[in-house]
Length: 216
Image (cartoon, rainbow, N blue to C red; front, side, top):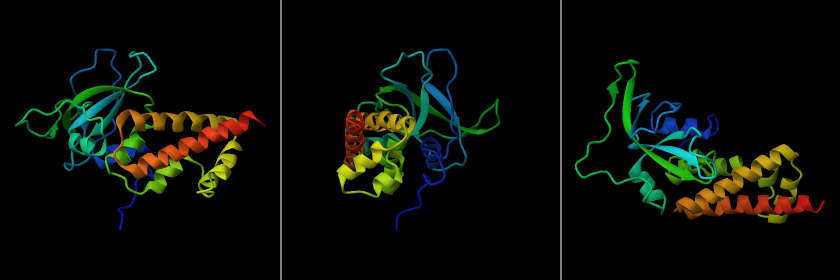
């Protein structure tokens, strides 16, 4: 029996932090990115090994990065592009929680790895499934396509027609998100073929819906 999904009640980044027992952390300093970052923890269990500082490849580096926790071993098992996270030196200890002297909070210090990717907003969702933290792909589908579109599966033409009926603002938002998610899948080389096929289907339906709207 699959474990309950956190995506029914949490946004993807919150769910990702919850799985790794850390508090969502922001880097707002104008200083150059440090090599390490402190993340408060919610409990001493299943710690991340690294934090990623995500930059959108189409914007300038002056934009503040999105900080996400990650486990290097889980990442290397779930994605083919495995040179993004520097290998840990042999004999290196795992991050150990400590009481931060300023905040008094239980905290873990993680190596911070800057990465540029096509679409930052969809990365937390992709990591949840690519790392195997979330396994119920219906929640992935619901983040990509509206229920009325999913209900027409596997009739891709009717799925696209239903998608084309969305209000302009929502439609454009889903075009950006689904296209970005598909670019991220290709950029990182997701191993799980079910995830790849689901995201590809969502993007194909979205692209076809855009074509429908052009010929109204």
